[in-house]
Amino acid sequence: MTHYTNRPVIRTEGLTRSFTRGKKTVEAVRGLDLEIQEGELVAFLGPNGAGKSTTLRMLTTLIPPTSGTAEVAGHDVLRSRAAVRRSIGYVGQGNAAAFVQRGRDELMSQARAHGIPRAAAKPRIDELLIAFDLHDHADRPVQTLSGGQRRRLDIAIGLLNHPEVLFLDEPSTGLDPQNRANLQEQIRRLHDDGTTIVLTTHYLEEADALAGRVIVVDHGVVIADDTASRLKDRLGDLVVLGFATESEAASAAARAETGSAGPTLIERHGTQVTIRTPRGTEKAPGLAIDLATQGTPAIRMEVHAPTLDDVFLDLTGRSLRESAQSAESAGSTTHTEGAAA
Ligand SMILES: Nc1ncnc2c1ncn2[C@@H]1O[C@H](COP(=O)(O)OP(=O)(O)OP(=O)(O)O)[C@@H](O)[C@H]1O
Image (cartoon, rainbow, N blue to C red; front, top):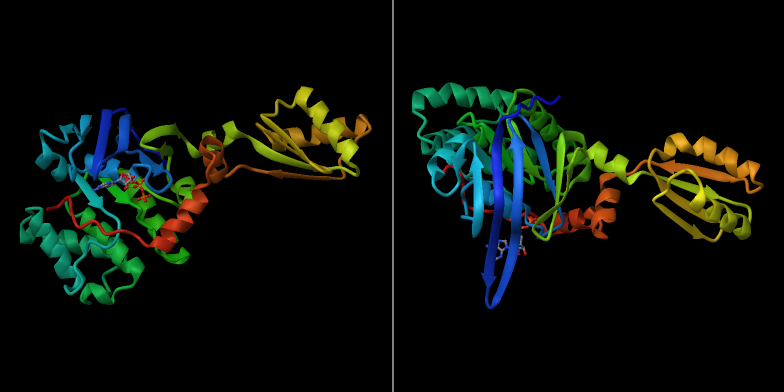
């Protein structure tokens, strides 16, 4: 469900950040122009090092931009850091919650750090413990909680101050599929309640299932910005045809080049012809009839709907799936800064 209004809660112009490592300068984010409306749920996708976390860290005032401007909830990230921090929740990579405290105490410490009086914090903490299914675990030290429970506690901490915008940096990295599904459900519920959510993820399925808008970043620039379904529709379906002989496959491929199917890609490998074409599922029956009429009947036909990974591969020549696997094996990085600080 999308609730967004036409009130931009995030606006950036030429947002840029570079880092100097020895004699080398890394341009992590290069001239980002962005507008995100109130109530949107936006996923930033991109391979390792694309600039996703750096973007989030600028928007949450953890690091200043090298140049350009950014406004969050109507406040400039450089000139009005405190006001930005009051308006947002930020859940960084890794677990922010202290390990030895009980979950409930950790929530209270963080609420106090936000300047929320103890009396007002108590009901809010109870509300969040229930919403995130943590009430039965609230009196255990954080280090004894499961990965999924800790991640939910992190998000609860991010929500203590009723933020207008919630930033989640790879919220489900390292979680098993069941905990990931559970977390996604919580994120969906927050969105349904009207919170603007910006998240980064390596999981394409997650972006596809959750986000109304997908922003693909590579080498610090936006290379695609649309709904997941429009990105996939634009790429088109993959129609895979099998023929009895190579010469039949070759003449079918040649005809498809000039045919009305409007393919964006045709490849032949032996007796197999692969056609990438918008609305391939609808076109496949007509294509089969045409081929049979022209004396080169397909003996096998499959139609594959595109995935976001196909979209990313098409845009960059690289697969996000490989990137997700390398992030899994590398584990998540812990950023110690916190927006609440
Ligand atoms: N503090 C820093 N010092 C030097 N270089 C940095 C620093 N932070 C980020 N970078 C570099 O900036 C680039 C973008 O990094 P960033 O963490 O934003 O990417 P990302 O898209 O979030 O990647 P990942 O998916 O691995 O989290 C990378 O080349 C990274 O090495």
